[in-house]
Image (cartoon, rainbow, N blue to C red; front, side, top):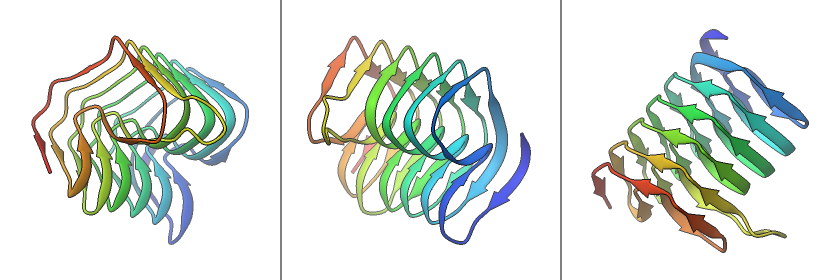
Length: 173
C-alpha cells in the first residue's frame, strides 16, 4: 500500500485499520494520520501474528502510535521492521505504540517523538496485561525525544522480558 491515510479518530493503519489473524509478507509505504491506535501497517491488532512485514512511512497520532502497529494486543511480531518517523503524545514507539505480546528479530530505525509519556525507539509501552510480553533479538536505532518514561528501546514496561536486544540512537527526555 502507498499514499496517504488519514482518519479522524481510532484504528487507522497504512494497510489495515483493525486486524485479527495471521499476516505475513505485507508492507505499507504510506503517510498515516489519526488519533488513537495509529500504525504504519496496522492501527489495532488483537490475537494476531505479524511476520515478514514492514512499514516505511511517517506515522502521526495522539495515543498508541507505532511505526508498524499502533496497539498490538496479544499479538506477536516477528521478522518485521519500520523505518518511518513516528510522533504522538502517549505510548509512541518506532515499531509499536503499545504491545502485549512478543517481538522477535525485528527493528525500527525512525525518529520517535512523544509529547507526554511512554516513548520508545522500538515499543512505547510494553504492557503485561494478562501475559508476560517479551522482546528478543531486536533493536532500535532512531533518535528518541520524549517527556517522561522515555527509552531507546522501550519507554515503559509494566512487566516483561527483554533478551539480546539493544538501542543505538540518541535519547532525550
